Amino acid sequence: MTMKMEMTELGPMKRALKIEVSAEEVAQRFLHAYSELNRQVRIPGFRPGKAPKALLEQRYAKAVEEDVIRSIVPDFYDRAVREAGIVPVTVEVPPLERVKIKRDAPFTFTATVEIKPTIELRDYKAPNPISLKPDKRTVTDEQIDRALEVLREQHARLDAAPAGTTLGDGDFAVVDLEGWLEGTSLEGTKKEGQLHRVGSKASILGIEIDAHMLGKREGEIVEIPQAYPASHPDPRVAGKTVQFRLAVKSVKRKHLPALDDEFAKDCGPYASLQEIKDKLRGEMEKALKRDIEESYKDTILKRLVETHHFELPETLVERELDAIVRQAIQERQRGRATDVAPAVNAEDAKAIREERREDANRRVKVGLILEAVADKEGLSVSQEDMNNEVTRLAAELRVPAAELVKMIQAGGRDSIEELRARILADKALDFVYRHAVIQG
Image (cartoon, one colour):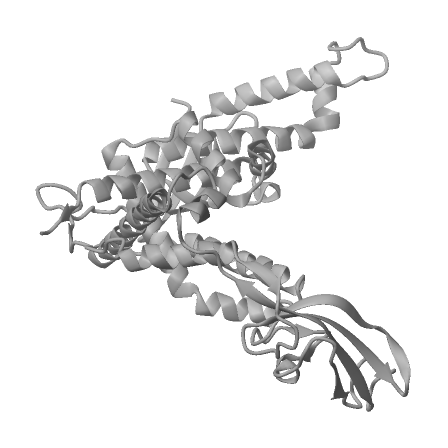
């Protein structure tokens, strides 16, 4: 036998694996290492592969020992894990420089591993499936009418208002805006031909113009004084008042099309208004069905979390928190591109970790339960499953599938395994959902 293994419990989820490799195996590894070395090195006075072993040992003993340790530790650690029947989350092996090996003696090292908990699965299928309250939501005529109104708004026309029309809430105007300081036009403060809806509260050049537009007519000019504080970053305007001149170039009114068969034909390949209603109802019913299914699955996940009790591997929780913080930083950076959010500093990251710890615990717990279900039910992920998920994700993210595949491959084995694990978890959740019972 080339290996002996002794496992010691260091806690609920920690194990020490003491691994002893036989002297014969060690000797064989040294023999192979010197043979490889002799093939590769060039020593003056000797033909390639013909240098005396004693000379090689004298010159390269330390390097060969390190090579042997580097090859022997992972090989026998993997073998020991399989023999112990455990699923490691993290592994700590002693630093190689501290490990000693002799050519004709057994080699011993200890690996400390954190393992996934053993989960005793509770009821999730017959004879005791999860029971769900029926979700009786349906698509109503009112919802169809609202969707039609949205379509109508999208096909609305902006027509010139009758001469002399005064601007009211909901009216549109094409405006020019320009800032003047001490009688001179201020560079960078000119906007021309801006379409503005009165009451939208949208600002132009940072100026709220709604209140100044009410009651105005085409051709009118309004002066809007804007005082800037002394602390303003632009020295040209700091502590000064800029006169903004707002010119109403034209007034427009929205014209909504009549809801009839002609409107339907303008919307696409529809012969009648009823056809549009039927299409809208079909799409909304599909979306509602997906929403109801998601709602049922959320209830199932809550029930699984409530009915299973086990300790969580701290490493998995910390990894999940790393991912949560990373996502929060990315979202904040996207926000900064539009000046919406401040940058994330170390204190923010620490605060996010503390705020989201419970969320991370729940995610890890759900993941481990669904993994256990998949294992028990013999569920697996095929290459077709992977391809389908990549296609779905690519459509959702609006990137070419080939581009997404490159991004996943760039993340290495971890990214591929993460995708596989997510698909497997979805399959396990779908399995529990299909075996649940909807009462009534």
